[in-house]
Image 1 (cartoon, rainbow, N blue to C red):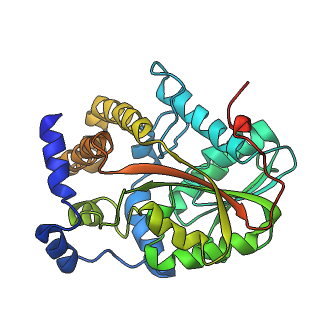
Image 2: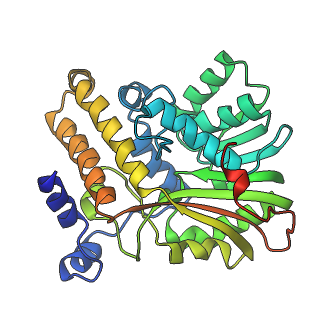
Length: 319
């Protein structure tokens, strides 16, 4: 563990270090235009559903889980995360939901199956959308969930709920105000929204090795930078929660499953450097969240003139 902390601190050098500034000048993140975003997402998420199914667990959720207890399994914690999000959004039967960046569709199907919400879920990963559509049909939820292979910027219509879990890292800070406008036009007067994202305590670039080899175009924002989504569109932040230590547990579960599937990974890619690269990525990420280099923010918000909001936070927690 000490070795991995040293490695990731090197990969995530202090924001004001000369090495980090030079690295940023030499390798700027790929742009997240409409075409650029599709290419960036394809390079990571379209590695194949079979690959990700080896280590993400039954839910196929590729975002931070929520551990109600230290003994919770990965699948239990991912279920609890989806419940946590739904409670924060006060989701109820008949609500209309738009999801930006739906992954393999787990949250959209959870909202539809357990709450009776009608969900339109956007994603530009062809592999993920095909998987999500197939699983929704298998579960008899395709009448409630529509998976759309398109960019979040093309979202149309108005909804009771806007949710985005694990997409903001791929938006790019230059597009935050644009995302805010999409959110604002999408929400009804009493609409609720939640954005869940990896972040940092202060602004700083993702290390070029991670951006080049693992997440092209990615950028984890500070809370101050995230406000560029909300402030220009007069969206009111209601609650901020940091789940950093939950991501440590999530990543440890992923790494354990990954290590147990190494023979299958090797047979898929026939590339030992790929095996080592993803081990470094998962192990280094554990170190980054464990030491506070990276954070995990959930931000709950609404329109500024919405007074239909609870007086306390009791609604967030199960009785």
